[in-house]
Length: 113
Length: 117
Picture 1 (spheres, rainbow over the protein chains, first blue to last red):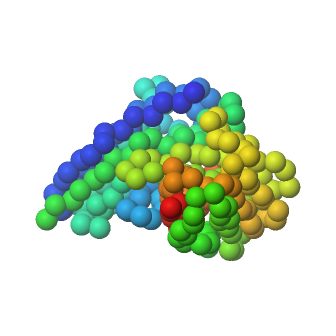
Picture 2: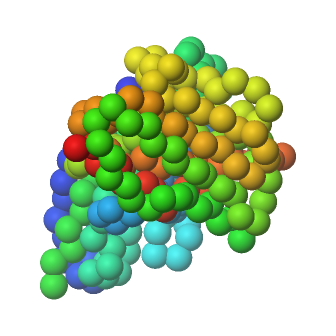
């Protein structure tokens, strides 16, 4: 099976930088995704990592280390609208019972003025 | 591009009745769609993978006779919650994968909030 862990809640100040960590244990790893979800809304795609290293996309960057089973999402120049839940999701190429895409518990980020 | 819609956006039904939720890919074909359930302050839980023209694959613990999935075309999948109970009240979200896209990115619908009274 797959096990994904994220901090439950984080708080940061507008304009600051925050790093949200995700650790996972899985067999047949085939990619890690980060999603942003505002309360009551569906998730929106932020990033996808399948190889080790840093992927930068504007104010958001995502890092992956497959050997450590570790990823982080880095948010720069925080804005109030960045207050949301951030979901880490892992895809595995092997599956039992059809499970091949598992979401972590999510990290609720609060950005304060 | 890559827009997914869901209908209805919210529904209230009485215990024991059935509710159908539609998931449509509006501007792309989706051989594979996914159905998730999300309880308040919890993460998404994959319920089943819907494949066009074949039977859905259900996750462990999800009753296939209670949550009926039909993926009759490349743009439409439906989830029917049969004999609904109050504990089925949840936020149901579908997602779709673009046919032939190897990035495995999923595009999510806006979700359907189901309340069973």
